[in-house]
Every structure is written in structure tokens, then in C-alpha cells.
View (cartoon, rainbow, N blue to C red):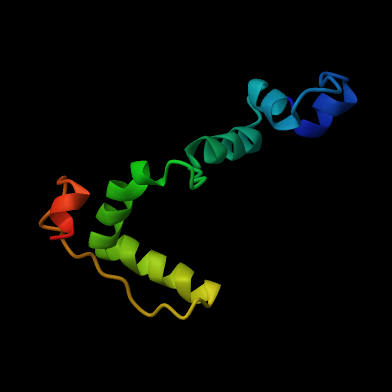
Length: 100
């Protein structure tokens, strides 16, 4: 198995190639681990945030995830002490019904 330094030394990486990708192709374990981590990473841009709403609500209802979110909010120092999920009995109805 070739290690990352050997890949560079042997000139196996093109100037326009991502080192992690090449190292992973040569079964470099640490590179494969890093690439796997990035593949599991989810980005939320804010452009289509409604798609993530149900996922967010399910996480808040799970005490383990709720505690993790609260810990993140604590570190971010936003002044948020707790979060709760309140079931909307008008879920799925038009805004007109909700405003009545």
C-alpha cells in the first residue's frame, strides 16, 4: 500500500488532482476515512430549508439529538436555553386556515 508521501514522491498526483481522492484510490486508509466523512456531511444552504424541516423536527424530538443541538447553541452563545417541538394541528393545511 502506498502512503501519501510516496504518492507525491513518485509523481502519481497530477497538478489538478485532489490529493485525498488520489490517495483514497490507492487505498490510503486515512484518506478514505476523510473522504467518507465528507460524503456523510450534509449542507443546508437556506435556499430550500423547507426540505429539512421534518428532519429537524424529528431530531428535536429525540432527546440525544436535542441535547447535542442545545450543546451547539450553548457553544455558539446565542442565549438559547431550550428548544421544544409543538405539534401543529393544522399541519398540511393552507395558510388561510391557519390564520383563522
